[in-house]
Image: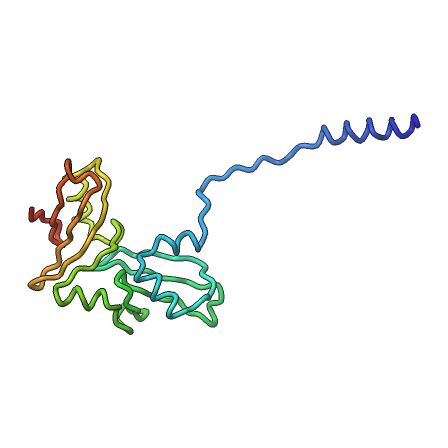
Length: 177
C-alpha cells in the first residue's frame, strides 16, 4: 500500500513539473473557405461551375485594371490549373482575356439595367474614396452599378438614409448628386 501511495506521489510531482509549450500566433488564421466566402457572388458561381467541388488552396485578388481579377489556385494543380475570374464572373485566360463571358447580370448592365450585390472591394479605388469622403461614419446598405450612355455609375445607399442620402458616383470617382 505504501508503495502504491509513493508511486502516486511521484507521478503527481512529475506531472506538475511538465511544461506546456506556449504557442503564439503572429498572423490571423485564414482558410481557403473563408477567402472563398468573401468573393463576389458572381465569382463564386463561376468557380463552382468551372471546378465543382475541387479543393481550393488559395484565392489571390488582383485589383489592378478596370475590374478586379481573382486567381483561384487548387490543391491538385495537375488536374485543376489556376482559374482566373473577373469580378463580374467572366472566366479569363492566363493572359487575362475573356474565355467565357459573364452571367446575366453583366448582360443586364450593358443594356442599361442595374447590377446589385456589389461590395466595396468590387469598386474602383476613386469610388471608394468618394464614398468615404461623403459618408465616413455611415454603414453602406447596398451598392448597385448602372451602365448608361457608355458610362458606368454606382448608386450607393446607406442604412441611415435620413443622415446620408443616396450617392450617384461615376466610375472615376466624380460625385454626380
